[in-house]
Image 1 (tube, rainbow, N blue to C red):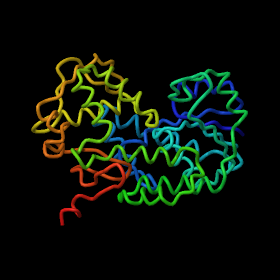
Image 2 (cartoon, rainbow, N blue to C red):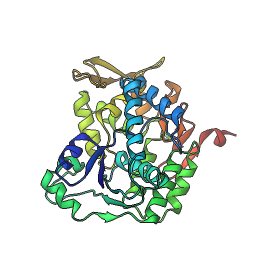
Image 3 (cartoon, one colour):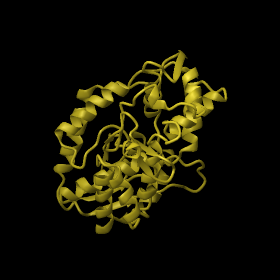
Image 4 (cartoon, rainbow, N blue to C red):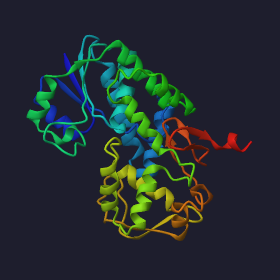
Length: 324
């Protein structure tokens, strides 16, 4: 029996002509609470997070998670599985999770198609850009996933999902890079920690700078920021949820003057977003983001509500310990 696992319906539909069942893995491990074992309680917490932040109905989220986990659990141990994942943080977190899960289920005949480019396609965002014929050509060059790669992926997932962010930086220093893009993606993940200089993460910083320069359309902002961050796999829903956080609180850092931000299954009217006075002060590094608003947000397994953990571009710093 052959199975193909891919992220995204666009890619999944184009894989259907290939020999074998196609399973589209519908999850977004690049945000929301995660844990090493992803038990029922943690999945429920994730469902509540996605409903709160993006409007994804919790019951739909839970039903999908139960179905896909159950489907893998029913596969015969000798099933030949090909994992189709690109280079970015969105896909690489999913790949690491699946490597750990498949290993725990005793599914060890694994192959991988993973790439960060394709001849003639620039910029390359992902496999969904390719045609059925182009994807089929990649299958011919799939590679077996080794025991060492499975071990590295499982270790990367455990580090990413740990409540102690130093476990991830430790993994980054120790890993031998058996997986082509996992280390690069996890380095990119560190950009999502608030900076030491003003509390904005790098995505927020870029968005604020564009707004300061006069770009206020949500769609244009998303296009500009995501175009600079091809290693992220940043979705418009994720980007909207980040912006939604900083427009809340006693002193919002941005304000929406027109339209609506994207939400699940809702066709938005393009929002017009502007920096507030406080937002400008934070961007100019005269104030700190967390003096104005907290962050109901997860970074892998780390809940960083008050910005305790900061990224200075080289190291993660615990600001509470620093103040002692």
